[in-house]
Length: 230
Image (tube, rainbow, N blue to C red; front, side):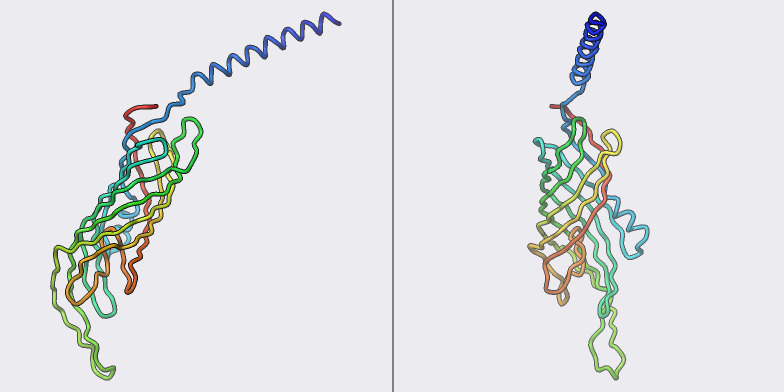
């Protein structure tokens, strides 16, 4: 009986030793280095809105570059065209914009994962034009509305803003990511047409009387082009 116990102990020891060695080999074979490179793609919400909203068309290209561990340089470049029909005014806005800034990834990944829960800050700038098609002059309720068609275009308009972004990016396939983010904007400056305000600013989106705050969102699909690992 004693010899049997000794035999079982030896077999158990050898099995445990082999298991430890195998586990160590598996750990050593895992590449713990993380990918650094440029990630490029597009905002999916804009072409989708272009399909379902006759008053809007636009696109946006997005990209980021991993600078250091949890820090990414980020940029967006896009174009918007929006037709509006308000109670007393109707027209359109079209133009291009860019946003430059950085993201910080607050998510701690397991080895081999590259997901993000991030906060980002952007400086945005837009160059655009406004087309005033017509407007209504206020008159007494007992008289017909005075509707005037003018078809005036105002060019060389600009606007700038600061934008906070909060969002997430998830790797769904090798180096392919889906993302969502929310935007909160504070307008810094804007040039306006004569006699009426900008109702829409490309990149900033809809504006409101008496407020310099704007909001937005985006759905992105991006692909990571890795340059190196470390």
